[in-house]
Image (cartoon, rainbow, N blue to C red; front, top):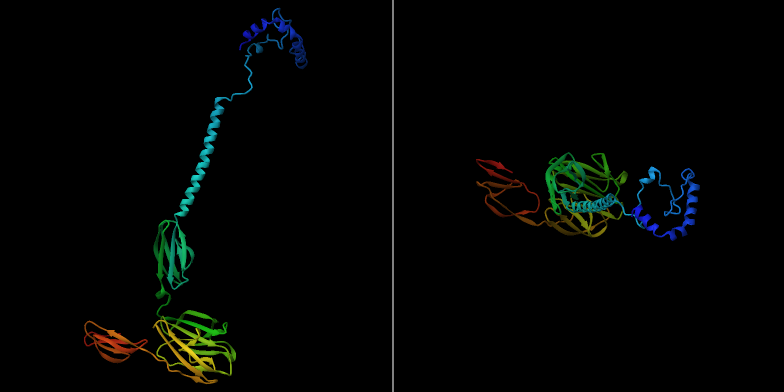
Length: 372
């Protein structure tokens, strides 16, 4: 509403103006007390106009003042509304992108594959992409894609490619028995009762029982278990790739005796499921009395049971029944066959009866020579 229309409406009601004159004068006095310089020269109102007015409109700065309707609420400008909408959109985009990122991370982690790595023998070092990851047997969670797998045993190592697919288990077995056990060494296991006895091989200290040595040179060795008068001495012969076991009983008793064995191949000696020695030992010490012994060679799938009566301070050698096996051989062209230096005929041969164990077989031909 303009000032002209406002003045016209007020002029039509002189009685109302006169009734409010006193009130306006009070307002004017208040204004003058606050702004004495502005209201120093007050002009009298013209007839028919306001009896009093709150301000002087003769100044140039007051002439440019426009009247605005007064309302109870302020309407924000359009740019503020646009800024608020942009802020809301930005916040929504931020939270949604965060959820998508988390979902993508979880999806990526779930897509890893598994690698199961085994070896013969166990406890070989495993490297994946030139990073050490543990020893065999080993299960690894790996990201999908190609990888480089390396298995190391001492100075020997073997490398091969490994491809992983998401959510799939890849199994890899590495046989390094030949590399770990070369032809020039054998394996030696030493057990004592009680354990913790000092072990020396060829006068050199090598540890305490129970003890397993995987790289002992082939040939004859003197093994000593214990110290002082209680030392148990054994002579052992190692062959390439084979395992020899020594059991030493450190208990000294006047009511004990010994058992020795004369068999064509080595066997482990058990009593009631407990290992008490091997047939390669000079003798096995047992308490005096009756004993039932189980003789086992797992490699040959041989098992036999004998009963012995051990006398105090004496040694006994039981008879161990050894079953025979059969041998069938052939050669092209024909050849004469010798087993352990004894001729058994010319090929082809079938169902030749021989004792269980190791044998040396030689093929001879008059023109082609011989082969073992």
